[in-house]
View 1 (cartoon, rainbow, N blue to C red):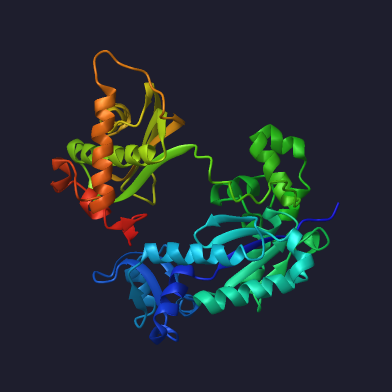
View 2: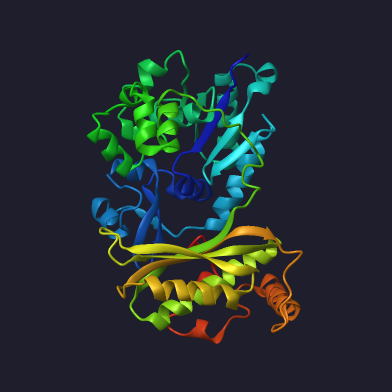
Length: 410
């Protein structure tokens, strides 16, 4: 059977590249994208290569970045524009294959196995894709090539991004020579904590992991241990599926608060707002949830504290007051009273909302009509057009969140 040809197409410094393409005057200047340029606050979301050459890294504080590079241009993120460009890139990739799977806003898998006969060798197709994306969006793409998704991802992250031309193929023929010597932390699926566990076992490289006894990994970590071993050996049978994100398993919303929240009443205000948003999203997708969950994180990010807890509801719901009562109960039960800096609400156990249990003591159909009327107002006039009175208090975040996407300005 002929090996598949899978690409992982990654956009270099995506947010910064989009901004530079839109503003040619910044082409030869170091640029970073961060939360609030006016206040020089927040963290760095993206840094162009010139900024990275000054030592600036993503996720560091803007103030620290400015100290490293006083001439750096700090721009506010425009999330809607980045989404638009990402969709434009998807359309470009679909010229070469009908099997395109977005992995993140700046990474997409493409199965070009059936396209080789039309467009030429994999490297030729990769260069064509690079040229099209560069000419039409101004963004530079790097391409990892492999017989499966995991090798394409490793090829891109560890080789294509670091080589002139931005293209690298990783396969069974060169895997042991070029991939196995890499530190185990460089392997897709291995985070900082897992790397520490592996180091304690004497596993320093991907090759060490590939040759470690499988049964021992399974004994320690079960299925995840088996997956680690398979990844190290370049084994991955998962297909590139355009519909991979269509089957929704949860509807949730998480936000980092602008300050530490100390008071229960203030935190409950945010929980109510999040419950409203989660239920609005569930209704828009024709779904209800059977399991409510709430999570929070403490103010000290260097020493993480917090919890994530869930409970099964008596009946599936997408009614905000009902979800709020559940998450408030969970929060009160598990909160240790310490300051909170981020909080999230989630509905899981999703089912279609076309049937539901009637209740003698409440009019669920009336509740639904009222919620849908509020949804229609927000859809037409904006998310801040109608909100609960508590949202205009100092603790409320709904009005500020209405002008953002993913926590950043549109």
